[in-house]
Amino acid sequence: MSVLKNIAFLLTFILSFAFAKAKTSAQKTRILFVFDASQSMYGRWDNGQKIQIATRLLREIVDSLKTTKNVEVALRVYGHQNNVSSNGRNCKDTKLEVPFSVNNHDKIIDRLGSIRPKGTTLIAYSLEQAAYDFPVDKSARNIIILITDGIEECDGDPCAVSLALQKRGVVLKPFVIGMGLTPEVIDAFKCVGNYYDATSEETFKDVLGIVISQALNNTTAQVNLLDELNRPTETNVPMTFYDSFSKQIRYNFVHTIDSRGNPDTLPIDPLGSYDLVVHTIPPVGKKGIKLIAGKHTIIAIDAPQGNLELKMNGYNEYKDLKAIVRKENEVEVLVVQNFDKVQKYITGKYNLEILTLPRTYIKGVNVAQSRTTTVEIPQAGLVSIGMSSNGYGSIFQQEGEELVWVCNLSATSTRESIVLQPGSYQVIFRPLNSRLSVYTKEESFVIQSGQTTQVKL
Image (cartoon, rainbow, N blue to C red; front, side, top):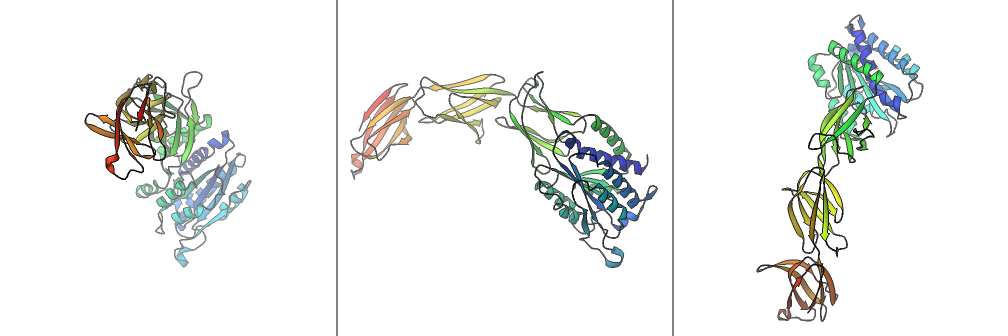
């Protein structure tokens, strides 16, 4: 198979990626061709010069896109304005020859026919300038296809520029077509984007299979959230697909099981790779997910879940009782759960800090697969404290010989009612106008579930 045919199939493959999604939705795709017209493009390649072969194939591809809806194309060229032989290297020799617009295909075809290689290879600067070639449109998919026969010659860093463009959300991960590059140069380009070697027979075979598949099928994915028996039964949870390279959010879905009992099929762009976060408590996920165009990809993630219910044994005197939930042996707060509510968690053991007065701590609560674990605490009681005057005071829980602070009394009120958990307590109080500590008063009392205790100071 000739190199000429290899390039033709390669371009077809990349373009099939580029407008696969545009065929099935109204989202606009913009493809910017960044074309190498440095002096080395005059070199012989297969049955002709590199410049002749590359421009001819690119003109054919652009012509074939005339009837494709929701796809716009543009052309940037570098190394074609300054003659390196007579004027030396010009590391800013790049130009947007044909900007994005509707029905500009013939302009690109004509311009490609008149390009003559002259200068040097300035990839990094050309990519930097390419950021300004795309119209501001957050809903569009911006794609760069770089066609080159050489490595950076102007001391720029194409990898850093490419990453910066992706992180800023300017473009998706670029495609790079290398024309007869050495293995060392090929390695240098892999960090720039999705690299394809135009002289590789193996690449041709892969491309041919993917193009056929892409022509017949949409690219889809399915997320299997597995229970402890490795069955895809877990569902109804939000999940986010991030671009692995740029870390930008690409998709948000709420996981669904269809009417046949299978996880729902998701239409996913095959460009790049993904990091998936499933927003369970705690979250689970998978990194570096790669999709193959035209194939259905199953993404399996362990996400066994059970329920945790928090209840009070009797009437709940607290207005808005909550519990802080942490994984066992960890300090990070996972969630603050409301009482009398059921919350789903990944199976395992959790520690609870219930915001009662005083706080209630329960360790090692086991959440089991597809079961509801109920945690019930004793009903609170009420203490009604009457004071002869305003003053300063606090309530303490009596634990053996030790007093543990629970809360302070209001310094501006002479009567206060406080909800407390069952147990033994002591209140310590000094009137506001008493200037000596010896006027401190103390009173012990016991709180019982569902009962009110009166304390006079």
